[in-house]
Image (cartoon, rainbow, N blue to C red; front, side):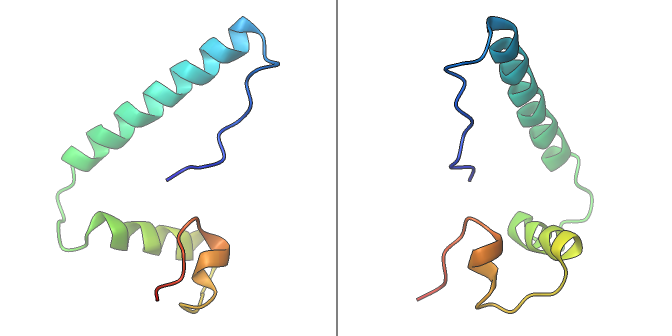
Length: 74
């Protein structure tokens, strides 16, 4: 989950409206893509892990928290 939301207190009304419209569009697109998935062999979490590994390269379980907002398993 995204925890570091941008500070829009100094933005113009147009900036804030654009950010809100983009946020809504991305959320709708995510829901639409989730419902259109054909291959259910991987969970959404597994798909997310593969996507992050694709972007960032290989990682060990210990180095994973530094690359994401998740915490190390205990």
